[in-house]
Image 1 (cartoon, one colour):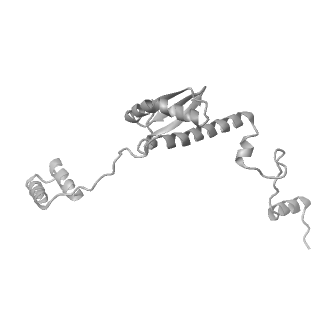
Image 2 (cartoon, one colour):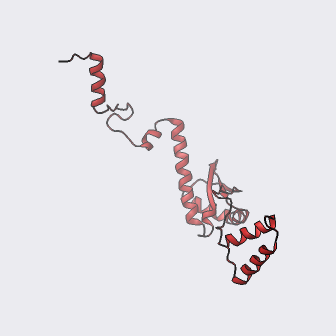
Length: 171
Protein backbone atom coordinates (compact mmCIF):
# COMPACT_ATOMS: atom_id res chain seq x y z
CA UNK A 1 0.00 0.00 0.00
CA UNK A 2 1.20 3.53 -0.80
CA UNK A 3 1.78 6.09 1.92
CA UNK A 4 0.59 9.61 1.08
CA UNK A 5 1.67 12.73 2.91
CA UNK A 6 -0.99 14.56 4.96
CA UNK A 7 -0.53 17.60 2.70
CA UNK A 8 -1.27 15.57 -0.42
CA UNK A 9 -4.33 13.97 1.21
CA UNK A 10 -5.66 17.43 2.12
CA UNK A 11 -5.14 18.69 -1.45
CA UNK A 12 -6.90 15.61 -2.87
CA UNK A 13 -9.80 16.07 -0.46
CA UNK A 14 -10.11 19.71 -1.54
CA UNK A 15 -10.25 18.65 -5.17
CA UNK A 16 -12.89 16.00 -4.61
CA UNK A 17 -15.19 17.71 -2.09
CA UNK A 18 -17.64 20.40 -3.17
CA UNK A 19 -16.52 23.98 -2.56
CA UNK A 20 -17.33 25.47 0.82
CA UNK A 21 -19.55 28.52 0.74
CA UNK A 22 -18.71 31.13 3.32
CA UNK A 23 -21.69 32.60 5.05
CA UNK A 24 -21.89 36.34 4.91
CA UNK A 25 -21.88 38.20 8.21
CA UNK A 26 -24.43 40.59 6.73
CA UNK A 27 -26.77 37.81 5.61
CA UNK A 28 -25.91 34.80 7.82
CA UNK A 29 -28.94 32.68 6.88
CA UNK A 30 -29.24 33.47 3.19
CA UNK A 31 -27.24 34.52 0.21
CA UNK A 32 -29.39 37.66 -0.21
CA UNK A 33 -30.08 39.49 -3.42
CA UNK A 34 -27.89 41.99 -5.17
CA UNK A 35 -30.28 44.73 -4.12
CA UNK A 36 -29.87 43.68 -0.45
CA UNK A 37 -26.10 43.68 -0.79
CA UNK A 38 -26.04 47.09 -2.47
CA UNK A 39 -28.19 48.51 0.32
CA UNK A 40 -25.54 47.65 2.95
CA UNK A 41 -22.99 50.33 2.07
CA UNK A 42 -24.11 53.93 2.49
CA UNK A 43 -22.61 55.32 -0.71
CA UNK A 44 -23.77 52.38 -2.76
CA UNK A 45 -27.19 52.58 -1.10
CA UNK A 46 -27.54 56.23 -2.10
CA UNK A 47 -26.45 55.40 -5.63
CA UNK A 48 -28.92 52.54 -5.82
CA UNK A 49 -31.69 54.77 -4.47
CA UNK A 50 -30.91 57.50 -7.05
CA UNK A 51 -30.89 54.92 -9.85
CA UNK A 52 -34.30 53.71 -8.69
CA UNK A 53 -35.65 57.27 -8.70
CA UNK A 54 -34.31 57.89 -12.20
CA UNK A 55 -35.78 54.62 -13.44
CA UNK A 56 -39.16 55.55 -11.96
CA UNK A 57 -38.99 59.01 -13.55
CA UNK A 58 -38.16 57.42 -16.91
CA UNK A 59 -41.26 55.24 -16.60
CA UNK A 60 -43.37 58.32 -15.82
CA UNK A 61 -41.79 60.24 -18.72
CA UNK A 62 -42.48 57.42 -21.18
CA UNK A 63 -46.11 57.33 -20.07
CA UNK A 64 -46.51 61.12 -20.35
CA UNK A 65 -44.96 61.57 -23.79
CA UNK A 66 -46.56 60.76 -27.15
CA UNK A 67 -45.38 57.51 -28.71
CA UNK A 68 -43.40 59.26 -31.45
CA UNK A 69 -41.46 61.38 -28.93
CA UNK A 70 -40.75 58.85 -26.19
CA UNK A 71 -37.87 56.95 -27.88
CA UNK A 72 -35.91 60.19 -28.32
CA UNK A 73 -36.02 61.33 -24.68
CA UNK A 74 -34.45 59.88 -21.56
CA UNK A 75 -34.01 60.97 -17.96
CA UNK A 76 -30.37 61.89 -17.32
CA UNK A 77 -30.41 63.17 -13.75
CA UNK A 78 -32.44 64.50 -10.85
CA UNK A 79 -30.60 67.03 -8.73
CA UNK A 80 -32.12 69.38 -6.15
CA UNK A 81 -35.56 68.87 -7.66
CA UNK A 82 -34.53 69.65 -11.23
CA UNK A 83 -35.06 66.86 -13.76
CA UNK A 84 -32.50 66.78 -16.58
CA UNK A 85 -33.77 65.17 -19.79
CA UNK A 86 -31.51 64.28 -22.72
CA UNK A 87 -33.03 64.59 -26.19
CA UNK A 88 -31.69 62.78 -29.25
CA UNK A 89 -32.10 65.80 -31.52
CA UNK A 90 -32.83 69.50 -31.52
CA UNK A 91 -36.37 68.88 -32.77
CA UNK A 92 -37.10 66.53 -29.87
CA UNK A 93 -35.55 69.03 -27.45
CA UNK A 94 -37.80 71.85 -28.70
CA UNK A 95 -40.91 69.72 -28.24
CA UNK A 96 -39.78 68.62 -24.76
CA UNK A 97 -39.20 72.26 -23.76
CA UNK A 98 -42.74 73.07 -24.92
CA UNK A 99 -44.08 70.19 -22.84
CA UNK A 100 -41.81 71.01 -19.86
CA UNK A 101 -44.39 72.65 -17.57
CA UNK A 102 -46.93 69.90 -18.27
CA UNK A 103 -44.31 67.20 -17.61
CA UNK A 104 -43.27 68.86 -14.33
CA UNK A 105 -46.90 69.02 -13.23
CA UNK A 106 -47.37 65.36 -14.12
CA UNK A 107 -44.30 64.39 -12.08
CA UNK A 108 -45.61 66.37 -9.10
CA UNK A 109 -49.02 64.71 -9.37
CA UNK A 110 -47.25 61.33 -9.27
CA UNK A 111 -45.61 62.28 -5.97
CA UNK A 112 -42.20 63.36 -7.25
CA UNK A 113 -40.49 66.44 -5.81
CA UNK A 114 -39.80 68.33 -9.03
CA UNK A 115 -39.09 72.06 -9.20
CA UNK A 116 -38.15 72.31 -12.87
CA UNK A 117 -37.11 70.57 -16.05
CA UNK A 118 -33.94 71.11 -18.06
CA UNK A 119 -33.64 69.70 -21.58
CA UNK A 120 -30.28 69.08 -23.24
CA UNK A 121 -29.52 67.78 -26.71
CA UNK A 122 -27.41 64.64 -26.29
CA UNK A 123 -27.56 62.34 -29.33
CA UNK A 124 -27.13 58.65 -28.65
CA UNK A 125 -24.12 56.95 -30.13
CA UNK A 126 -24.97 54.86 -33.12
CA UNK A 127 -23.22 51.60 -33.87
CA UNK A 128 -23.16 52.16 -37.61
CA UNK A 129 -22.05 55.28 -39.43
CA UNK A 130 -25.08 55.42 -41.71
CA UNK A 131 -28.52 55.81 -40.26
CA UNK A 132 -30.36 54.19 -43.14
CA UNK A 133 -29.81 50.79 -44.70
CA UNK A 134 -28.13 50.65 -48.08
CA UNK A 135 -30.50 49.71 -50.87
CA UNK A 136 -29.29 47.60 -53.77
CA UNK A 137 -28.60 49.60 -56.92
CA UNK A 138 -30.75 48.56 -59.84
CA UNK A 139 -30.07 49.59 -63.43
CA UNK A 140 -32.35 48.93 -66.35
CA UNK A 141 -31.20 47.09 -69.48
CA UNK A 142 -30.66 50.22 -71.59
CA UNK A 143 -28.40 51.97 -69.01
CA UNK A 144 -26.45 48.72 -68.54
CA UNK A 145 -25.93 48.40 -72.30
CA UNK A 146 -24.86 52.04 -72.54
CA UNK A 147 -22.33 51.62 -69.71
CA UNK A 148 -21.01 48.39 -71.23
CA UNK A 149 -20.57 50.14 -74.57
CA UNK A 150 -18.84 53.05 -72.84
CA UNK A 151 -16.47 50.72 -70.97
CA UNK A 152 -15.54 48.82 -74.13
CA UNK A 153 -14.69 52.10 -75.89
CA UNK A 154 -12.30 53.21 -73.13
CA UNK A 155 -8.61 52.40 -72.89
CA UNK A 156 -7.80 49.06 -71.25
CA UNK A 157 -6.79 49.53 -67.56
CA UNK A 158 -7.76 53.21 -67.41
CA UNK A 159 -9.21 54.41 -64.09
CA UNK A 160 -12.47 55.46 -65.74
CA UNK A 161 -12.92 52.07 -67.40
CA UNK A 162 -12.19 50.28 -64.10
CA UNK A 163 -14.74 52.50 -62.31
CA UNK A 164 -17.43 51.84 -64.95
CA UNK A 165 -16.75 48.08 -64.82
CA UNK A 166 -16.97 48.15 -61.03
CA UNK A 167 -20.27 50.03 -61.27
CA UNK A 168 -21.63 47.44 -63.69
CA UNK A 169 -20.47 44.60 -61.45
CA UNK A 170 -22.18 46.09 -58.36
CA UNK A 171 -25.55 46.71 -60.00
